[in-house]
Amino acid sequence: MHSLTGAYELVQKKINWNTATIGIIGLGYVGLPLAIQIANKNFKVIGFEKDKNKLKAIENEVCYVQDVNAEHFFTTIRSKYFFATDDFNLLQITDIIIICVPTPTDKEGNPDLTYVLEAITAIAAHASKNCLVILESTTYPGTTQEVLLPILENANFKVGESCFIAFSPERIDPGNPKYKTVNTPRIVGGVTQKCTKLAISFYKQVIESEVYSVSSPAVAEMEKLLENTFRNVNIALVNELTKLCHKLNINIWEVIEAAATKPYGYMAFYPGPGVGGHCIPIDPKYLEWKAKQVSVDVPLIHCANEINKRMPQYIVDRLNHYLQDGQQGLHPPHITVIGLAYKKNIDDYRESPALSILKDFNNLHYHWSVVDPNILTFNFSDQTFDTVPLTEQLISSSDCILILANHDNIDYQMIDMHAKCIFDTRNTDYPFKNARYYRL
Ligand SMILES: NC(=O)c1ccc[n+]([C@@H]2O[C@H](COP(=O)([O-])OP(=O)(O)OC[C@H]3O[C@@H](n4cnc5c(N)ncnc54)[C@H](O)[C@@H]3O)[C@@H](O)[C@H]2O)c1
Image 1 (spheres, rainbow, N blue to C red):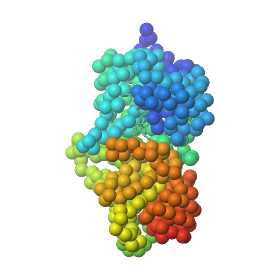
Image 2 (image 1 turned 30 degrees about the vertical axis):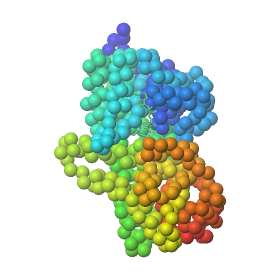
Image 3 (image 1 turned 90 degrees about the vertical axis):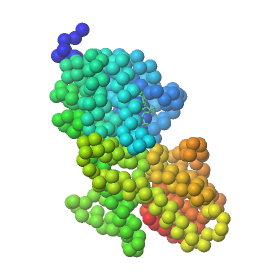
Image 4 (image 1 turned 90 degrees about the horizontal axis):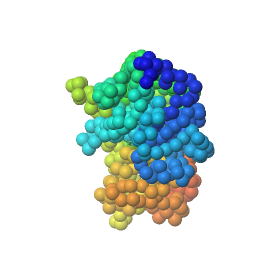
């Protein structure tokens, strides 16, 4: 049994000496790269994952997160530093536990903390009473202090004395070639000063970038929501201006490039078919929900969500117009979608606007095919579909090619040679000149 101050020093020593065992709960887009990064710094990592398919993939050495460097993945999972399991009893041998589980919304669009609650309940049941717990999942301000803390305290964890809790938002940007887990600055806010200090010294050992402390978990939680709400609002602004510019016959992309020459006070955001992924469409809803709890009106945040949500319908309306331009006959058109993912060069199609657009195509009885070299199969409308290979035959037999994610690994030259009509919602960097070409 350690004395109360001893617990802090013990975990601190284990961090300094690389002898701490780290538990990562949730090995998805966030947890897997983080686990690999920490293992590469020679800490023993136990990954706790309840999805048997992911555990099987790790066992079979299949790297299922595209952003993870395959070589790092193989070296790590074959090393003594990494082990993945669904046995939560093993939480008892961990010193630091990082929660990286999903934080979706429920059917009403309100925060759904089911996975976070599962994770913290498992920690309360199995972890050692001397540990550091860090929540990395994005959530509303107050979650760490008001939800996690009482669960641990009720299980006799002495928070701030022998058990330490902090919030540190994950800030990775999938597909970003420059910034990864290792070199993205960290924000840390602990429940007490000791909690913050311990979490900071841990991240300093595993991250090669600034580790910045804030005064509470709520500040760190709010900081993450500010980042993503800022993004959502600015995307909504350019999406709205895109509609106006289209009517005024002004090229929005040229407008943005011109504005981007200003060296201060402006940051370029680009229009598109809508927003997707686990963050941008969801995180502002967490903020909106929290605002409602304290009776504060946040019309700008709400409005940005609505504008972005309506973009897929706008894309379909514009597409219908271009089909008419082409004097499309009476038969239902065949549309080939390029890119199912919510943005370029990634394989994630969660909340992708492409799914709303396919739904509209189904309602209109359009035929459609999806080309996305990063995605083999996808679930849509309670069914599993295959993406199809990009062939001359597919392109020449389609009434329109709809570019929704302009991945680099697409043969745009071939598309240009064989397409009748292209509607490009991403201002793809290719000089289309043969096909009838329309840009968002
Ligand atoms: N994906 C991103 O780009 C990104 C970026 C920054 C922050 N985030 C945030 O990080 C969190 C995780 O997102 P993600 O994209 O990695 O999600 P994900 O779905 O890819 O991964 C989460 C994993 O947790 C597992 N899981 C769920 N409940 C569990 C439990 N009780 N025990 C063990 N495993 C469990 C799931 O099976 C899944 O594999 C979310 O809060 C998200 O908002 C995501």
